[in-house]
Structure formats: C-alpha cells, structure tokens
Length: 224
Picture 1 (tube, rainbow, N blue to C red):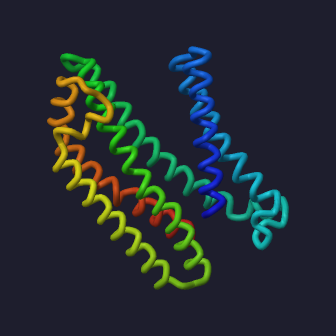
Picture 2: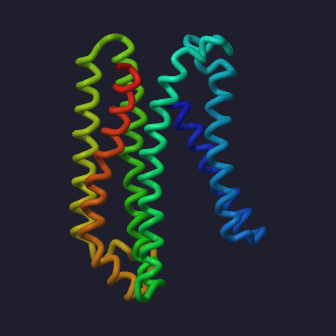
C-alpha cells in the first residue's frame, strides 16, 4: 500500500505541474485538461509497473512467465463486468450534465451540478481508499483460506465507510447554505446548490458504501 501511496503522490505532482504548463502557459484550454488527465493515469501505470519489475515484490514477482495467462478467461469476464459497471456509473454523471444543459438558465444549473459532483467526487476518494486497502486484505485472507478473516475485514470496511458517510451527510445538511462558497460567490449558484443539498447529502451517504461493496464483490467473484 505504501508503494501505491507514493506513486499516487507522484501522479498528483505531475498532474499539477502539467496542468499548469498546458492550461496556463500553453493556453490549450479543454485539450490541455484532457491531456493532463492522460499524463496522470500513465504515471500510475508506469510507476507501479516499474516498482514491480525493479524488485519491489521479490516474493511474488519472478519475471515474465507463460503462467500469467492461466485463468485469463475468468479474469477477462470479471474485468468486463467491472468495466460495464464503471462505465454505467460514469455515463450516469455525463448524462446528468447533458440533461442539465437543456434546462432554463443553463449556466447556473451546470455550475450547481458541477459543484455537487465535485463535492461528491472528493468525498468518494475516502471510500475508494478503503476499497483499495481492504481489497488487498480480503484477497490475502481468501488466498490463505481464512474466510472469517475476509468477512470481518469486509464488515469493518463497510461500517467505517458508513460512519464517514454519515459524518459528511450531517456536515452537508448542516452547512447547506455555505457548502458552495469554496467554489463560487454567485448568489444564484449558491441558491441552486442549496436546493440540491438534500440530494447531495444522500448521494454522498450512499456513495460511501457502494465502492467498498463493489470491490469486495469483485474479489469474492474472482476467488469463487
């Protein structure tokens, strides 16, 4: 997990630097934003690949082998199912933005929805971190034949994520009038976000549990 943390930190630093270079210095606007996202993802890929190949996993990585293709079809089926799930989740947000563009006073509506999506996305990083950490623990427990340990780790992860979701639910419902001030000072936008605050609070609460349950489901399917 420490390797994932440091590689992710490196990706964040690269993302900030490249964003500044492409968007502010080279004036590439939207094209620059898309390009910086690609840079960040590839830093993660090559960073973890380099860590593995260069001796970071001496007990599990012994070099390239034909054995890597064993059980490949089962892994492909699991990956396709997971990919479809993630696509539907991401397309859901894109469809919301497209539908919002057809409303009256489009600029305010899109601004308010974007603010809510950003708040939800920030909060979701916490349960995603639990998903990554607990996923490794559950996989290790299942690999060792300890089903009770895997079940306990899953329960702890879900309960912790739920408590964190409840905290942010209370926070959003309490400061629903001020929550958008970190993004905008427009009264119209603040009012629009205020109207969406109840929906945002419940979205954050449910999204605190969903990533963890999805990750555990995929791991159990992979083993069984």
